[in-house]
Length: 272
Length: 76
Image (cartoon, rainbow over all chains, first blue to last red; front, top):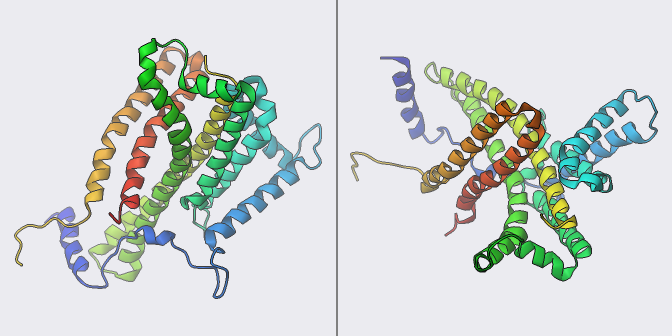
C-alpha cells in the first residue's frame, strides 16, 4: 500500500469519532467582548483598529514631526512610504491634483496596510478588515467624498450627465448604457470597493485557520503515526500561505487606495 | 438507511467552484496579455501594470461576490 492510500485510510476513522477533526467555519470571526462585563462593542477587532490608528500616528509623528533636510532614521522610512503612495497611487490617477489628496491617500493606504498585517502578526493574528464594518466605513467615506467632489467640480446636472451619458457613443446605445453606467458607478463600485478588501481578508484568514488547525489537530490534539505526516504538511502549507497572505495583504491595501484615487480622479474631471 | 455511495458537504462549495471559472479565465487573460505587452514594450511598464491591475480588480470582484453570496444567502 502506497503512502497516499494509507493517509486516506487514516482519515475516515478520525472523521467518525465525535472528537474528530472539525474544519473552522465563519464562527471564528464571532469574538466575545474582551473581558467579562466589557461593553459588547469592545471586541478584538475594535481594539486592533484603535491600536492600528495609534501605531500609525506614532510612526508618522516620529517620521515627520521634526523633519530634517537630510532625512535620518524613521524619516527615511516615512519618506519612502510617502513617495510610494505619491508615485504609484496618486500621480497616475490624479495628475496635478495629487498633492491636494496625498494626506487622504497616505492615511487610507497605511491604515488598510496595518489593518491587514494584523492578520499575520504573531500572537495578534486577526485581520481587522475581515469584519465588513471596517471596509464599509472607509469605502463609504470615499464614496461620499467622490459624489461631493463630482457635484462641486462638474455641477449637479453635469456630474450625472457625464457619468450616465459618456460621449462618443451612438444615440440608441444610451438606452442600455445609461442605466448600466448609473448602477455600476453608484451601486456596484462602492459595494465592490468594500467587499473586495473584506472578502480577501476573510478568505485569507479562514485559509490560514484551516491549515494551522490541520497541523494542530494531527500533531498535538490527536497524535497518530498515520496522521503525523498530514499534520506536518498542514504546518508547512500554513507557512507558505502566510507568505502568500502577506503579499495579498499588501496588494489589497494598494488596490484599495488605488481605487480611491481613481474614483476621486473621475469626479474631478469628466472622463474623455 | 444503508447507502452504497454518499456525497456529504455543502452545495455552496460547488457553487463557488463554478463562480470562479469566469474570473479565473479573465484573470489569466489579463496577466497573460499584460506580461506579453510588457515584453513587447518594456518602457511602458508603469502604464501597462496600472491598467493590468485595474482590469484584475474589476474581474476579481465577480469571484469575490461568488465567495460572499453563500454567506449572505445561508439562511434561505
